[in-house]
Amino acid sequence: MDRKLAFCESNWAGPESPWHIRVVGSEGLKPGGGVNATALCGREIKGWDLPASRPTRDTISYKHVCPGCAGAFDAI
Image 1 (cartoon, rainbow, N blue to C red):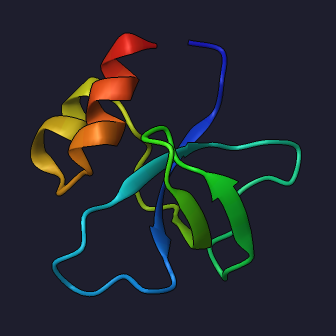
Image 2: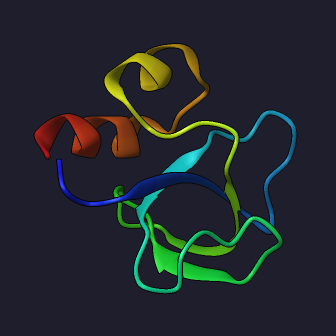
């Protein structure tokens, strides 16, 4: 896969909210906030990136990831 992906959360996220996955553009990672993008599931995300781990088949299998994003990741 040649696209850089990141886990991200919306401003409305709580401790039980699933992580989303987005394609990172030329703006790079935004761990401090400022993400304004569409997640792989189609949800508009205004929030921040979670730089601790990158989305891979392994990390998606054990992280609390949005089912729509996980399914879209498998289709990439």
